[in-house]
Image (cartoon, rainbow over all chains, first blue to last red):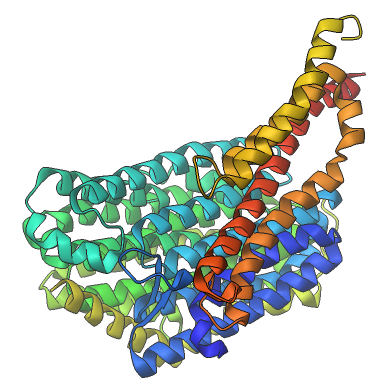
Length: 493
Length: 145
């Protein structure tokens, strides 16, 4: 009986858990309960992926209302993969949260913190699982509003301005998306994605449909922080609590990329976007700029969290670049990189959370000599850093390799050179942290740091080892990404 | 506000009607215009009016912030709980048909309960937002002393 209700449970579990956490009122219970719920949600997403791999697409009718009228939850390979990514991150990050939250969040806010985190999770999962265009907006708002609150809970007072900045930019993005959906509804009278795709076919040349697509793409580009619409991201990531940064960096932008893919390929169709409209170029140029500008700016950051935030801007550039190639190979490289990047950034930000736990700062200057005092933390950082650079036998290498293959397939050898050159920039900024942490003496005045406790190290290492595991045993991300890419081209084709 | 007798008497007269109107909008929402959100806002506005005239402290005695926050959460639990109840009775999530012996009654109960959840949450949220804004100046003065 449960197997058939998995799509609903995927959203309902965290959604129902969030208010229960508030009702209970105790921070300790809140944490325990959230961990249990996140693991349950992770199990559900594994179940969903298994079901999809066995029996193809799943459709679930909310309230049993038939599809074009009621809200339909629709799971195919692509969003089952995204669900797995989001719940998996939550399941690893939540056990880490207890100690980290205890020192970073005011005691009376800790219960609400878990409530917001669960709501954010519910929102992200909802965006990924729904088959209804307006429903995407609703869940987008749930996840965004809770994210603003989460970012604002950061200890530094600048977290408030960062959250406000994100609020303004995020709201513009969501509004643009809503205007786009509104135009689509005006033209077709339907909000169901599958139904929209059908009804849009004869309307593809019309101006409202073009405008709708433009609004949706720009709105989502804001949400996924595509250069030059990334301005909210560095501050939000830098000043949010460590747990939040790790969770958001691994999930939020990926879900936005998923929405972009879903609308581009399923609703509008690849032909519309890439043959009739110059989407390739429109995504290619900002993506390439994002890779180089993001990496270059990252090199000059003084704060390690900000450094990684700019690196995220660059990494998002790789994903969008892969999508802009508009081939099945490119698309699967992009989807695989969504997964691999979540692994890297999860490990890196959790390692920085450990550093913050011990010395109360993530300024690169303060991290001098810290590798002697916190060898395990920094070893995890190095491993994930290697993956970020794209060294063989790590997950990062796989996504770069797929991306290079996709570029060479199109004969774009110069693009291959650029990708390799940009990896050199990643070496520079990761090396900056490593050089300070390993080869500089501890500055006068800083007391010796203690290695982070096991409850923080374990989740960090799970992510770090996952980078190696998925660098060697690549079948899961690569097969799923290839299957999803093929399905997307099939649907739009 | 102790000297503004007109305001105080008028407020005392108005509040019961505001509350009653909120309940009307709430429970008539499935037949006419209205529903949980509007009703919740109207219901919350009665408390806000009371707070404006009789002060924040008195209002907090009527509606303690801790309880209001729990009401905020319990409305969502009610909404989502109705959905889960539908699954337990053999339907899909939020399927109201299975809630009663036949579909029409089920739909009726379902929407009534769900809208009640919305109403409770919205009213409690409105009051909480007001508490936060109204409580801020007092907090700031305290901090400056």
